[in-house]
Length: 185
Image 1: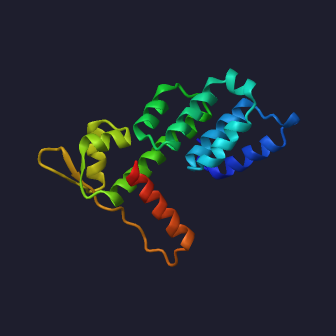
Image 2: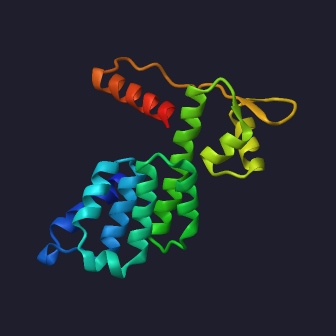
Image 3: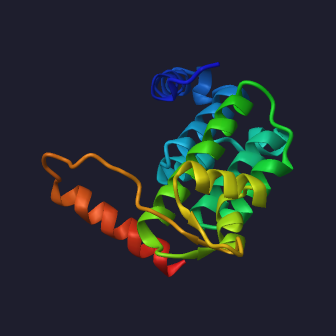
């Protein structure tokens, strides 16, 4: 199981650049597109989608399915993202990346919920994380979030983060933009 997606991404980008006639293999495109989504690099994913030759996208439904996930992420449609991830029977080596992508999206969502909400309904949490009710409750307990007696309301705690020694203006602007965008959607 490959977990160093940054290195794999570099290798795949090199394969794409060095491909004969400038056209890489469908597997290269599929893995690279999935890795861009894993890295939350939606701009590069969109540019890659636009430069994949039409004959490759039309003859490889997995690439189209990966891009469907990218479109859901682009629109910040979390329930749709999980539905799209579950709707396709992914093949290796893309399945490995897709599993990691799903976990990373879920982890980012849970961290954002912890930072953004003082209370949230279990149904909303289930919808935003793509987990079953039992799995969502288990995840809340693991994070030491308070669950009301009726089991309907969750009181999240912000994730513990080490204090940065220095935060650049770009980092602060990125975090603020991510937070505001999350609240608007």
